[in-house]
Figure 1: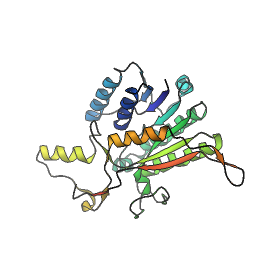
Figure 2: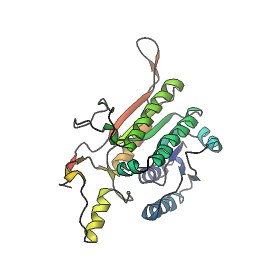
Figure 3: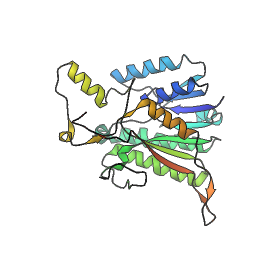
Figure 4: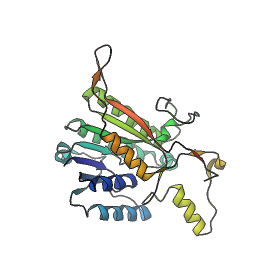
Length: 267
């Protein structure tokens, strides 16, 4: 039985991934701070109540921006680390930057440091399509520039990618970043447009549309995201040398999306 650490296990993607793996006889150590509010907190609690029904699930409540030395045992016994814990949201990141720096950058550095000092096979982490920023080329490619993020949230995710590449170079830890595109589905985040729009209609309120509706979203169903993560997990970047004989960092980044952007007004 292989053991997997999943941070953010009570979040939307973390819960769905944990449940998928537990049903296939993996052992999951779920690490989450459980610090949501209102509807978000209710969803976190209900997701966790389902996961703890599995005998192979271990729940750990921890703020990942703090010292993680007390989690060393869990990292040492794990085969994979999938880091999904983060504070999401583009607009909110610009209003509360310190929260995002703490939860998305400091926490990331703590987790990858622990992973680098254990014997895991593969470190996988959540990035975001937001890193493409002002890039106007569609569809996005992993080879496109991400030099111009336009939100602090995007900047934190770009920072994660840079740190992971550096750790892969310094310590040879196989690392893969996954740029998710607008994930939706059952148990989804209440702050995402499908739920916000539905709630507005049910309560006879106007639907808020940003940027006059002039934007595209590549809506990706949660089951497809989970399948993508599992496939990537089992295909870690190979350790190999370049033509100059020097080691190439075992690092990769992938877009995981629907490849069919929808116009916001059509949606």
